[in-house]
Image 1 (cartoon, rainbow, N blue to C red):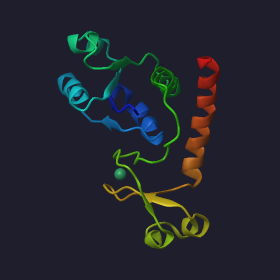
Image 2: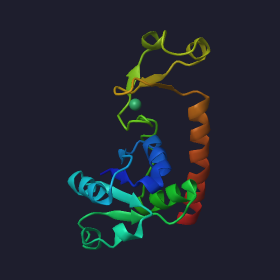
Image 3: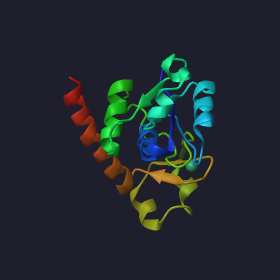
Length: 162
Ligand SMILES: [Zn+2]
């Protein structure tokens, strides 16, 4: 089963990368620890945090709520830690909105004609859209760059994981 996550405010950037990999990841601004823990429990999400106090809560030490203490400040090292610990893969990358976490829906070229810049329309043929914020994604330079970055540190993860 694919793990779902809820990320603490102190590792918010990490949440974006997990979404990019297609993992259902909640990130809520200005949330207190108690609510964070409650959401994790209710929705069976793995809690990612840098807060050692949360890790000491009985609900975590008893194993009722799965939580992972993120050690590094660097987001790539953080992602590597989660990928290795949770055995994540990239089979469903680019299937979720980076902003809202919603699963993306395929759109035809005609659907997006008036919604994307003309040069994008001319050069791209595959589009997906977020049903919540209506943002349109295409496999242009932005995704390519992120994909490249992901590739680079997933390779590192493979090496250190073996
Ligand atoms: Zn969205």
